[in-house]
Amino acid sequence: MTVLASPMDDAPDALVDLAAGGDEAAFTRIVAAHHDDMLRVSFIVCGDADLADEAVAAAWLIAWRKLGDLREPDRLRPWLVSIAANEARQAVRRRRRRGVMELAMADAAVPSGDPAARATDIDLINALARLDPEDRLLLALRYVAGFDATELGQATGRSASGTRARLARLLGRLRTELRDD
Image 1 (cartoon, rainbow, N blue to C red):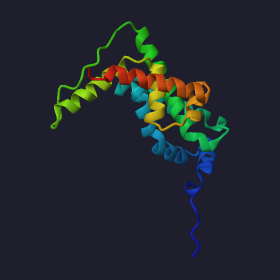
Image 2: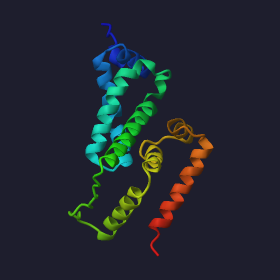
Image 3: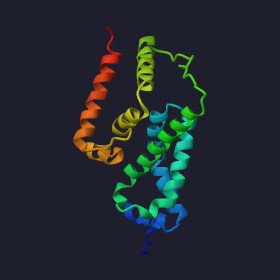
């Protein structure tokens, strides 16, 4: 008995080709594979779960429309995450233009365990919130999405060495700010 391979079992390049040709099932597989990464990076960029959801939803619409323009299907993940990050940055800009400033409040519910660990988490959250969205994007792409220096450079429009230097300065700034004197 010969088992026929489903188009869904094809290589990622073929999956992208199918989705770009309008195959909704192929696009659904792409969404399932990459949605969580896009959401995590968007959340780091904008710091708001609802805003991150909106940014990722907008990113999927763009990806659906422009999937046929993707020249390197093996770079699908960085392409999708970059779209989501850009949409998150735009969402932050739109929120600032509205003129209403929202104050982020730390969770009132303290989980069981060491309260000192929770304080460190709150300090890190506050330090990240004080960074520009561009800097949060760089940190999110590196440490949440796992981009290397070349991918970071492509996503941010900078050279790989410039990106590494900027990342080093950001990490130094965070270490200084989080140091317990």
